[in-house]
Length: 102
Image (cartoon, rainbow, N blue to C red):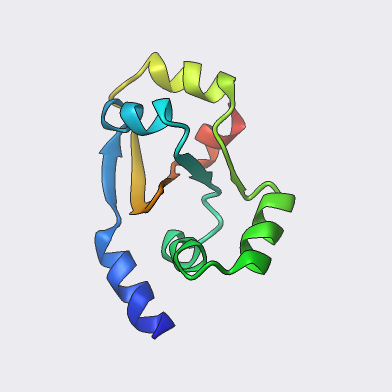
């Protein structure tokens, strides 16, 4: 089941410009996923309510809410592209290491 879900979620990952993510950011539903994590794995953990994995990633700052500085930085370039995956009610996004460093 989990492998099938991972494959399904992996097929739903795609590029999204920051401009298209703005409504989700306004609802505080955007979650930034560290580029070192597999976006589909994070999606599976969120979708299956795998609290231990999600809590570990949060405590290690591998999944976070975007900071005010990141939001301001991305706002200056609305065409900035992320890999995105919707796992209701969240939109998981993954950029590059430089996106995380802002």
